[in-house]
Image (cartoon, rainbow, N blue to C red; front, side, top):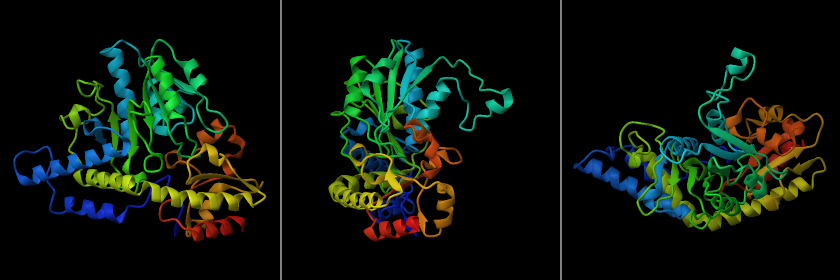
Length: 395
């Protein structure tokens, strides 16, 4: 199979697997245990991985909290900051995000806004219309422009005296659009608003330095940089006293500085660390390869009369290509099913299965949602893969 769905997940790097295996076999200690060597070896491995992940984003080791993935990190940060601010801080209880975010951000904010109680909210069928409740928080969803990015002035106009946090995706997971994080964070800080960035689709592709970019909180997952699934991190910017207090999402033991309870998955953490180390080492080489393939792919699409790129190259990260097939009889779901034994591509986010893309609607292409394909490349992709896919699509 030709794999072209790397925005959903990337394959596991062999170096990462080799690093993980000892911690699935002989090095099985709990890093929170004491004194014996299995525990101390596990703790050392976790701290080395923490340093490797911190290095990838320009952070300090103490600022990295390991989670089950970017979705948990986003939940931890948004809920934790707002709850602490409202009940233990200055009382601010408002968060701002965009209408083109990953579902992890959208549904956290909708939950806090009292619009939903679960990810498959049944209140519509139970009460004939959405039942909205008052959880004591509020969220605003600013519109993106036609290129899928947030304009700073639009964001600024949504800030109130109750706004404590803003949360924006760096690279959009469906269309590859790149937000101007530097400008957005400066806008937030001018109004004493904290800034959270979901960088899941950016790490390993774009250099990130949380201090230079003014990022207070960050979410990321390992499996987008050739690491294992089920592990990610929350970055929490420290001050001179250490990590600022936020309400814990998962209560229990005092692991991860008391922010995230639960026994650490050492093998996954080691895998994340190794993937981060490789990403730092090989970023330029991999970026050059993917940039070359992206340009080749775009050229092939532009040579085809009834296809176009949804987001122009200058406004998106290389390697995530959203294609509009301008044929009246084209249906993306049917096409993907037809080629599923040979190619792996998608219609959009793997977290939005079964419903039309809210991202495509947000950029004004809602009527075309059934004619859009997302193709995403990795460091193992080849020109021959692109040729084979385009031949199938043209046929």
